[in-house]
Image 1 (spheres, rainbow, N blue to C red):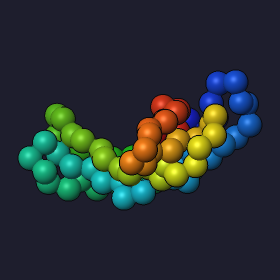
Image 2: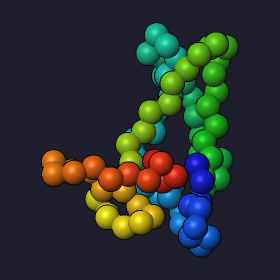
Image 3: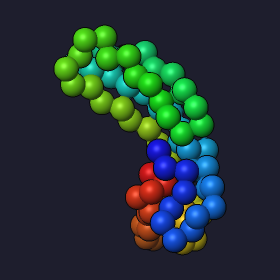
Length: 81
């Protein structure tokens, strides 16, 4: 996951908004994973040819470098999602 966004070259630490990270194979079996540094996760595929990672992103801050999604509108910055 990027730690900065184009046009704003400060370190932004977008990974701090990642919640409930999980990894599964295509049959829904959980796969082991670990966060290996502040912006990377390692998934042990256990031989799975395909797998899926899912996570939630806190998105309740409206600015040019963050995301906000609510019942009135949606604005997201792909860099931080």
